[in-house]
Image (tube, rainbow, N blue to C red):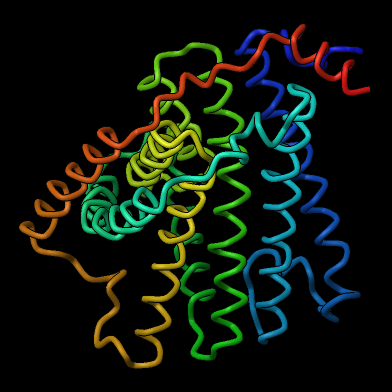
Length: 315
């Protein structure tokens, strides 16, 4: 039996190939979604919808549809396809066959909520950093993203809350974790890269690929934390759960503000320094507990000759 095509490739080459595959898959998925929104939603000006210009609720749903297909067809499909090219057992390769303990799951949820004040501080610091020379247009792009996010979260009905939560919380949590933690970070750890370097680098890739300069530091920290969860648990499901809670928390708070349950928009509010300090201290405590409760796993995979033999025996 033939070995998986990419199994013996150097790590650097595999990283280049996986991102190349991601770009191709995401481009194809996005274009296919764009072509289909007219027939599915009756949108007359699809080019405006994909830019985030909404004139009706239908336009909003059409945009969310494009986002969902792009994420699923890009991150998720690329991760699954590349895993097949690397391993006989994609589920095992991505650590889908390992379930985290309930204790770790509860702590992960708590940590994600606790860290929000520190994340807010990082966003504020990041916004004051000067843009690199020649990248002045990034500021305009950042403003467009912020305005688009505000429009997407400007709703008061439960059906829209459900659809928005699926597209902005569930799908990114699954798709992005499959690619950045299960595939990218997993390959780094399997290649015997130092865990800290692997976690930080994969977190940086995660942040850069979001194309949000003003949020780079915050996304980098969150991405590194999600990688840390993957490392200490040996399970992809733990960072998926934490990623979902982080995104859903933002959507839910905005919804509660829109319907008047919250008197102020917490996303726009500035927290006092003592809450930021408490957030850092408590979050550090959570990280320490994860380290104490970690399940030792060197991400070792059997030699490929062994896998070939096993599959040959099964046949």
